[in-house]
Length: 581
Ligand code: HEM
Ligand SMILES: [Cu+2]
Image 1 (cartoon, rainbow, N blue to C red):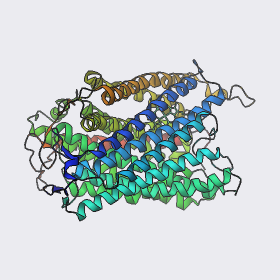
Image 2 (tube, protein in one colour; image 1 turned 30 degrees about the horizontal axis):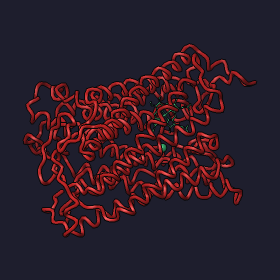
Image 3 (cartoon, protein in one colour; image 1 turned 180 degrees about the vertical axis):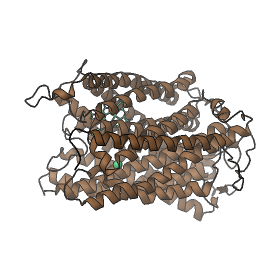
Image 4 (tube, rainbow, N blue to C red; image 1 turned 60 degrees about the horizontal axis):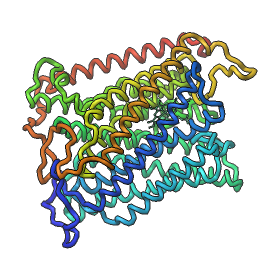
């Protein structure tokens, strides 16, 4: 991106300050908006984390904490508060940041931004209160004829409309920046990625409205809703939302790689193309949620899940190569040239942004991505559909992947926007590892239990209290898996508490500073924004030898692992007790 030497209109210029760490022109009225969204996000995460612990300790039979009613109530609230509120508040904070600071632009329509921010906040509180008071025990999916309380729908619609306005606002910001000549030439890759996320979000939130508005009418008794139509529309929202997370997470990856090592994309055009693949792949690939639903033809299911889905997968594979390749190139330019992986070993692992990036990248690739592709394969899906394996998969995507990446970025954005030092830097260095270790344990437990047939969203998987008791679901392996879930949750929640403390302490008590301390960076400030503090050579695409040999080898290892996992999954399918006809 080229930013024109900023010549803001009279009167507006006074509202800018220059960030001493990055060099960006910061439009000061946007700071409070970003902090508002970030605080709302962190509060949602804290709420969801408390609920997560209580739920996991229920799943762990040795503890068996909650009675059934509370388990369903809290599972419903946890799903919404985490997947919708934590993630979307953070994303809107990122859009406000990307639509102003990252392009040195002013925010047009500050009042509009406050209006949708408050709509989102009020909607989130209303929905959460309704869920926690037992008025949404049918979960956020609430397939007809199940209904939640009408006010629950009002809350989530208010939130969704607010978020929709925010996405449109972002698009308008980019448009005015171009029109007024604030940005000449292409937008930077991070801004482009945020634009992809915003476009997907607009599409997704419209689906949400189309699904939830009739659901509200149904809850009010005004109409009945066809379950098959609702489900199809709902997953246009439910799955699309995951692609927003994906695009936003990858935006964070590029940003974190740049901030911590000075990395720049090895092939911008290809990375942009990968985001276009996300736009194409999303809705077409969303049928995996309906793989056991009646009314959809076999051809539609298979073409949708096993072919269209690969378009989105290809996008992720491109990023999964280009992000580490960029880091490797930058690290080699810094003199870390020993062997294949010397650059990785010598990475700034003490910086929370770098460790978050790497845990997110590796965890997302090896666990979330691979399990997702396997599960999206029509036949393989039958082994794990609606079991805890699914929950394991999406805690690898949205928690180990997205949440970890968001946390990573917030260690920089929040202090820089607040002009305060990152509080408890020592603890921040540890947090990604604690959170990551807890999540890995949790995910292992969820996947193991699911693989052995334990269903999701069930208070007692053995139905021990009822007539339908299932003895096969109380084997030693399952007992062990359930213990992993409980222990993993304890550690992950400890990591989550550390993160929330760091954020709260930074916002309210961080030491004010014109040049906030956020740990060691790989960039220095220039008027065009941060650039690497060492010269990084252009990636030579004509070279016959791999330019990033370590990453190249890692890619082949990854592909081999992928093939082995595919084979193993089909072997498992061939062994299931119920036969395949
Ligand atoms: C400390 C971290 C976390 C722990 C220990 C945890 C644990 C759990 C557990 C035990 C369940 C219930 C599974 C079941 O019984 O079916 C669950 C469900 C869920 N979690 Fe988490 N979770 C954590 C963080 C998150 C985050 C950050 C997100 C989203 C970004 C998230 C999204 C969800 C969703 C969408 C569900 C499904 C709810 C439903 O079935 O409607 N979780 N989690
Ligand atoms: Cu999906």
